[in-house]
Image (cartoon, rainbow, N blue to C red; front, side, top):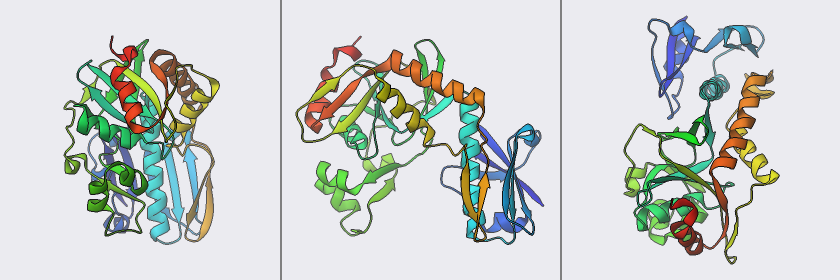
Length: 311
């Protein structure tokens, strides 16, 4: 058996598998595979074992996921990739860091970080591009933003968990015909592409960690007249909690290995769940600045002129 480490930022996952597994495993673009070193056994673990029956097990007191397979095929590699990412996210939450499905930009005029949060296809990326390209904002992240609450009214934003920007064809076409032509015209079958922000010429915020004051907006672009609602309600809380949970595969996970459906019982914990709820309640109470629904120009104008973020 061969031992290696999956690395993402300063989080490590220890992997034990046959050498053939590492030879054929297609490394996920969001992490790297490195050699083991001293104290590697202290990390969460994934052990792949050749057995007669495929199954997945979670040994909580050893922080270990066991993947049993009959033969190495794409289903085993896919299961391993999913579970490696699951452990990465669990380790983030153990450090009180949460992944928000949001775009994030720096507003230098007011020394403020804005988190543009919303449903898939709501217009977060389009709004981010407009602010950065036309209004001197600086790009931090898109799609996945890492946030940690250090204490009352104190938050920290990290460099993006995912380095690339995911562009949706329908949104890009409405926003910028030239951009659409460059990336989608010859690939009409593609609904989304991923591209590095540098390739879009975006001005990027420099810095490992960001401790500046933040503000959160819920964005929804449409052709409707501008609607702004600053009230925090039950729906906001549930949407944000679901938004964080969508990145996790902590509970009742079904996967396919060697043509068999396998089931992994929850690796979540009461402590992680309670911390998640507290994070959602605190960040909305302390940093939510409103739900903004309307045309792109109106939404951007409101953000630029919002007195809530000018102090």
